[in-house]
Length: 135
Image (cartoon, rainbow, N blue to C red; front, side, top):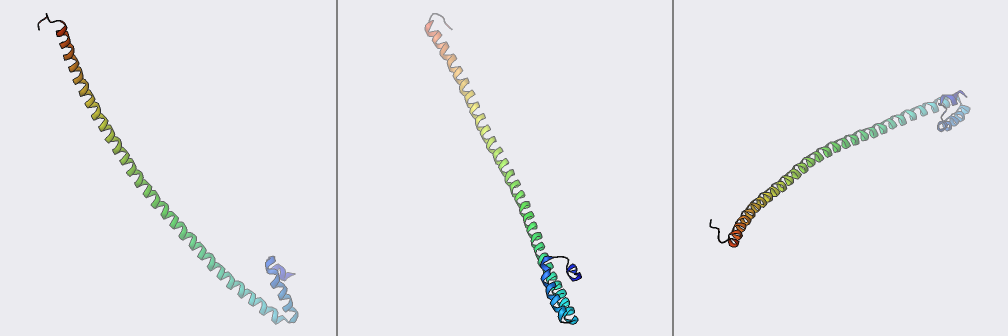
């Protein structure tokens, strides 16, 4: 019973315990050899497992760093793109406003010219209708 408790109560490790019991029935020397081999196997497996875990952790760290770099690069690219977009949009707005202001100027000039022409026509009509009045 003590041997089973020494295995940590893990069900996966019970089969080696059963084999140790068989080795115990042969002689005491066989039991010690089996325990030493099992301990060496656990250490080797444990070292190998630790190496595998360390490699996975390195992969996680490397991937995390890659993602972080991509995020930083993406943020920089989007910021630059956003600045370029903003500058271009402001430039387009400025161009349209200048164009429309020029159109307004031309319309005002046209309106002033039309007003002047209307005034001349009005005066001419008045003179035609009233030939007796001399200027």
